[in-house]
Image (cartoon, rainbow, N blue to C red):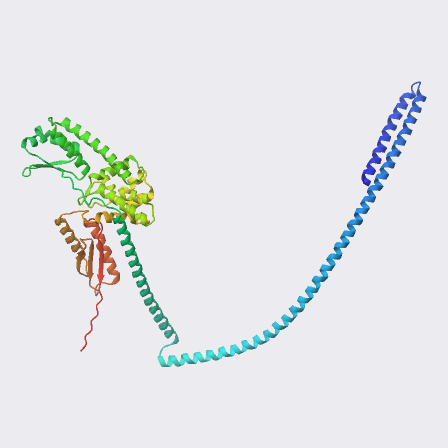
Length: 526
């Protein structure tokens, strides 16, 4: 118990005594008016004595406890002082050791400082000598420059510019040679790699080379059959042409009727419906509408099934109903006698092989390759018709195809600029499928006409001396006069010829335009 507690205990005891005295006096006052006043006073005195005794005892006990607490506090303080004194002595020892180390280091620093002062003196002497040598060199250089200027009749600035120009020209020449060698080497590597890649892809696929193109002419064996087709007052043929959208033309010499329209799907609907009507006894406008409607529904259902079948054969997963239908309708499209449906399946296999060799996504390559020509179904079809790539890409995006697949579809004719390996894979697969032997057969007349068109376009440009169409019209080599046509103009001529060919000529695959400019120098010895 500390001193504060002792004081509080004393105050508490005094308070208790005061309370007891107060009640005792109150009792005494009350008893004074009664008959037992003397007894009450005696009782109060006794109570007061008892309270004084209790207060004395409590005070003595508090003093004893306070003395004990004071003794404990004194011993603890003495112990803390002894520990602090010990710690101070240890710190004094450490400080003495550090002071010795500081003195040693200070002596080392003084010795190093003296060395530095000495070396600074030597350095100043050498700097002075160096300045003298610089001045001598400058005088010699100026003297040399003056002598050279007098001998060469050129100023120093002119000589410097001439030297820099010669160095730059020589550097550019060496750089051009190195770049040419590097370009040739990488081009050679790229050609070897592409040839190997194409060879591997072609060896991994073997399909039927070509399918016969259906004939949209129906034999008319008798005038009675022709009359049934025309009908009374021409009502049958009129109804047939209005409902189907095709045109029927009779050839009396060949005894045939031809179905004419730009859309091969409509032509096929008309062909099958007409054959069914000719087998029917009653050929009338009502049956014309019924058979055309039934045949159209059947062919649309068959187109969806053909689309699903192709996706299953190629293991390409699922697609929307609209994609199935347009891809199945490719079966009725032909390009130079090549069926577009089977061409697209062949392309998908080749694109998958190329993607596998290049470590690209095989399924994406197959989907983009198979769907690349669906735009031909969605527009007015025709051989060599442009714009179908973009139309097909937009349609594919609309009905659930991924953006990069649709972009690759639109890039296979360079209407979109190729950005990824997938775009180039689709282009390469299209070229392989369309360019292989027997894939696309065309008439001799159309081939000759195309070669003549290519030659005419190339020779129409000024400066062109002659040109040759090579590789079945897939390569056009143009020779220009080196004296009238420069290097930059050569590139412009190549671009213009390629653009005009793409715009005016109908051709399968692609045509490469190569413009050659020769520099010939002659000398005569006498």
